[in-house]
Amino acid sequence: MEMNNFANIINRLIHIIGIKAVSDTHLQNPKNLWMINNLHLKDFMNMKQTEIGFEFSFSLNNEVVYLIKKKDEQKEEPPVYIANDICYTNSSFLLLIEMVKWMSVQCKYVYKTKLFGLNYYTVREMFPELIRIKEFPLYTLRLSKHYDAITFMKDDVSLFFIAKSQIVLDDIFKKLNIINTKTQDVPYESDVIIGGQLRGNMVTGKVALHSRLINIEIKEDDKIYSYINEWIAKLTDEKVSEIKKTISEKIIKATFSQADNITKEAIRTHIQSLYEDLRIDFINFECKPLIKIAFKSEKLYPDYSVCCYLNNKGNVEDCFLE
Figure 1 (cartoon, rainbow, N blue to C red):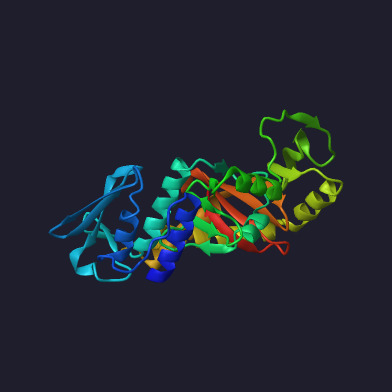
Figure 2 (figure 1 turned 135 degrees about the vertical axis):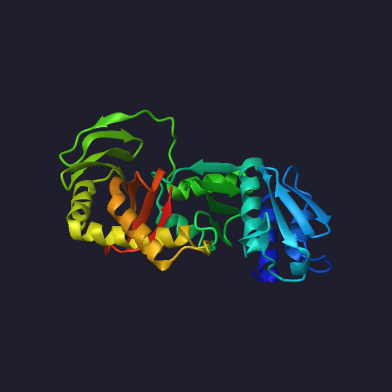
């Protein structure tokens, strides 16, 4: 990441928490590390210079000590090492992610959600500037010039909205139709949805797909039945197989992107194993014009859901672990 771009993003982040803008001039090397350190963020980062370079750790996980070696200090994007093994080549993104994780804990105006009930297409429109690095496949940062706020997706796909004020946060709630989570569930009768429950304007329940009952979530309206039936018709065995092949390849390649010793044959074996292990667990229809499908993988990713977003043609637009 270029230093000017890194400095611009940092200044947009600190604007949200009310800190004055910083300059990337007259900084010691490595500049990205010193820029963060000079912010003097409370309980964020510990840094010290040693004979071999700069060692630093983050308060949220101070057991992990990172190292920028002395020979790399002059580089605009110095690599980061752990125990002398290269960890990340993109130190700037590591610093950004750790700073936003800190903001999600320290900032006053933060809203955390699991995406269920949110229109992710609208989120992408509101925060169109995507920052994602292949080295960090489970982290996503989104920015917007029109909001004093950011979104941050963590490894468990918890989505955080971090805002400058409650007014900004309330405006985000309004545009995303976020409802009061304390609203009580009431039974929802339907010929399509089995065991339906209505909370606010959101319906949850199960639908029959390929002789199995699948959990679903959708916004209640007069087109709910036709919309669900249209998608069930699209999700044929052949289409589901195609989706599984696509996300298996993407997830496995992202997982092993930093592994030096793994062979192409081993990668292909892992892809096939994940493909055979995937089972649909949940469908979220409340992402129009996208839908979200969550698969379960009991063998390879037992503690996660393997998720993807499909466009209205049934093509995979994004996939991730949740």
